[in-house]
Length: 438
Ligand code: GLY
Image 1 (cartoon, rainbow, N blue to C red):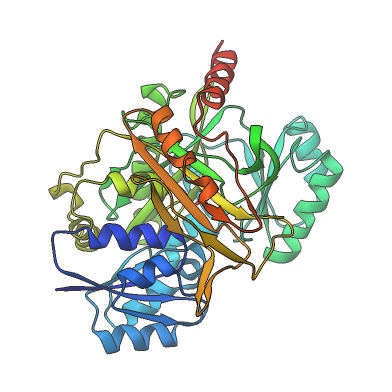
Image 2 (cartoon, rainbow, N blue to C red; image 1 turned 90 degrees about the vertical axis):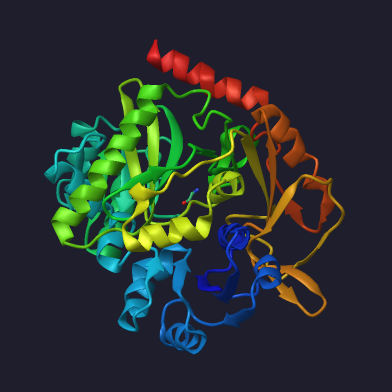
């Protein structure tokens, strides 16, 4: 019997729990979260609620249950040192220690790391510790096309792009100054034009094994309109690439990830053990790095884990033991589409504490619970993305129809994007890449 402590209560952790339980080994899940995720509750042998920013309760639970290892899902507890706290009591995690988790939590650390070790994919960038020079850098050096990145986690609100969230250099300077006040520094960088893709890799610190590429959709409304969200849905293709990518884009992204893992070890002496998730953009000059995350993507985890063929528990143990190079990791050759149901008003003024009913949905659709809580009389939304539906098929188009067939089964004050994974939206991505590649 393998006892695994799973930390986190979103859809990402629901699919992690499901995939661990699919292992041919006998697996017991001990869950720890801020709220009771109904999907994880069904799969876990014990479920404790507790804080995510202090780790005494977590350590007590891990010791009481004598778990074999832990899986820390969300970014905040990783950045705050949950993995370090568990290691103090001898428990290893599939998630990185705080010093290497800076890959996600400090944007300046990552840009400086790539620059120092001459890894390709960095934009032109500058780290500012005072507002002096911001206006000139944004307006003159970057010709008004810039991105401002807070040097710490801000729940998805730490990155703003000129022409999208920032109307002009004045707004850029204002936001960058706020970031300096909060975190002591800010990264200002060149804006890339192209199509974004997520490339997540298992990483034991020395070896990486990449998962299928996925495209997420950040904007709240159809046609990529509206405010940025945590991600409204995502798709992947049966060849594990994406329709708008060239093989060279994927190869470059893999190489950047591999070199970054090696540079992290050289720089810190600590191995990155967990999920190294590169947010890349395919440009006319190849793949560039937008950012790294130190965890599974949400929704991207729901595209890749349901088609993982290899025993996930074996992969987790290989990450911890540094033996990823000794196993052959395989994914089914299937396309996937994930669509999120979110509360009305999300992301700016989401309805919270509202009850939803999940009616019958067609067989073959996978459903994951996210920011919802199981109470005595039903399921209540907590204010963020609520329910995800995933379709799996031979083509993106078929997978889209499967995921879409379930959307109307949720009743309550909710909405969703119905264009994710459709032929029309994918054609727009292809047309854009053709335009910029010339
Ligand atoms: N898909 C965006 C994220 O997980 O951060």
